[in-house]
Length: 425
Figure: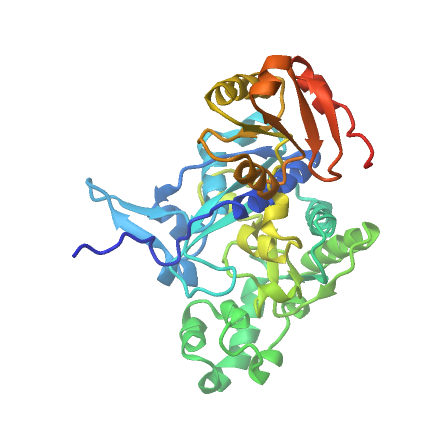
């Protein structure tokens, strides 16, 4: 008795009509990003494990617990990418992009892999779309990215958006804040979850991002990063907030927002939605500045800022049933008899060559079943082809919305389909 073959847990198939909704979302993101000057980059799914340990941070949950890592035949440690920023930085350094252009704007999309607890809209193979901007130190660029995202989700009709920002500081700020945070947390360590107790020794800033004790009064009373910034870092944060205001973006400062990756410096942000389909996890997209990452990975000192959005969560928040995103055939050809099916095949081929979307039934089934399928496909028009139509070279073109019909010459179908349908009788 053989077992049925099934997909790996947390790695799902994407089937029509859901794929149509995904394609719409992805294309809208691409169009918005390209209008803002971003070009597409594609990197391999597999990278050397050390890239993520250096880029993301060895003390992060992703590197410690969530990566899909294995040895290849030459005993090299490889990892299926859990995120894309490290890969983009690797590509930026490897191809010496900074020597060719002062400012680089990239966007990407594709699957990522993390072995984590699954929740609504979160899977082990998941999809991200994001952007990275290298070479711009001015804080207006992160404000531009946030405004671009707000416009994207607003244009998609995603409800109840909120934007949250914070600063996690840079190399000059972290030691002072780390000292203040440890002085506050260590006497209260017993009140923290097990993971956060461990993080106290390795990465105390990550305690603020605890997903277990989200309502903990201990964390609520923790020192704020913003109160421990240098004058320069605070001025940069204030300038980014002013730019957001200038762009008309409503936002709130969230002192506990630190993001889950170690490479961030300066401003970090999240955009959330209270769309019911998202469940308790409301974040749609997050990102921020990471001015020290390129240099830490062996490249030249390079300011950088970017974000990643979850496609699954964007789709959940996007209004509209999936089947309404499927492209509609311009014409469905229903044929009666072998000769008509042969002629319908030739007609469909010619119309498709003229840029029209045409569907037809290859099987020998009745007209009623064919027109039922045309209805299910939401075809704009249908045409029944039988012996009489073959003999006369003319047939009735039916508008599937209004029900109006008009007789047309088969030779003129492409022109007739481009004409507006007649009014309802």
